[in-house]
Image 1 (cartoon, rainbow, N blue to C red):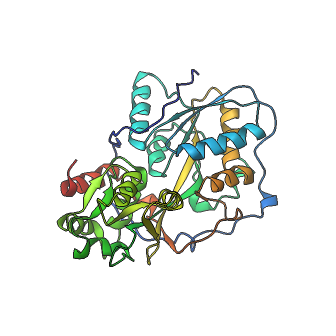
Image 2: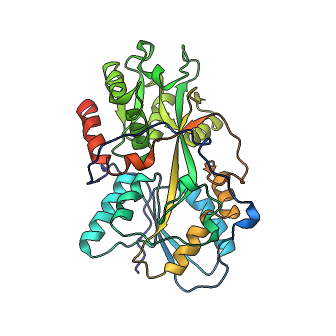
Length: 346
C-alpha cells in the first residue's frame, strides 16, 4: 500500500453521509453508564511480536496528540513505521469517498474524532473486527465489534474574560444578554459539533428549537471549535461552544478567555480507532490500535491534553458529563444536517 504524503492544516469541506433514519437521541450520563472495567493487569498490552509492514493512518486527531502518540509508539514498536494523513472530518471523508470510487481505501487505520464518522464504514463492511484482551480495558459503551474508543472530547462553554453575566448552562447561550455574540461550530465540518447537534436535538426541553432560538438571538456559525475559541479570544463573540482541550490550551497560553463547564454536563464525545478490512498490513495495524488503548498509549494521549478513555489512567475530572444516544444517531446524519441547515444555512 502506497502511503500518502503528510497533509497539515485544515480546509473546509462538508461531511458526506447517505443514510436516513428517525432520531431518538437521549441524554446519557457518561460516567453513570460506564461498566466496571478489569484491572490493568487483566488487559493485555499491545503485542510485542515483530511484524512486517507499515501503517498508513488516516486521522482527524490534533497534530500535537498524533506527535505524542507516534513518539511513544516508536519507542514501543520501532519495527512498525507509521505514515499519517491528517485532515478535518469533512476532508477526511471526502478523500476516502474518492479513494473508494477509485478502487480502495488507502488507509490501514482510521482514527477519528467521533463514532458517527466510522459508523458508515462499519455498516459497509470496510472495517475489520477487533479481537483480543487489549480492548477489554475500554468501557463497553466506547467499543463496537470493529472500533474502540481512545479518548474523550468534552464540549464545553467558552466565554470572554470578565463577560457579564458569565454563562453557566447551554441554554444561557440563547439569552438576550448574548445577542449577536455567540459562536457555534459547524456540524457539517467538525464531528464534535455534530455530536452537539445530536445531543441537543434529542433533548425534550431543547430540540432543534434550541438552534432556532440561537439563530433568532444572532448566533453566528463558524467552521470549527478552534474558530469559536479564537473568535471569543479576539472579542468578536462573548461566548460559544468549543472543546475542553482547545480552551484549556489557550487559557494556559494567556488567552483572555474562560472555560465554563456546563452545569448539566459537558457533552462527551468518544474518539474511536479501527482497522481497515482491506489493509495489506493488518497485523501492524492491529498492533497500532492496541497501542492506542494500552496504558502507555493512553498516557501519551492524556499528556497531550485529552481525557483518556480508560478509567484506570489518571485524569482530573472537572464536572459531570452527558452524551448523545449514539446508536439512535447512527444513520441520521443527513437528516439532522438538513434540519440544521434550514435554520443556519449552508
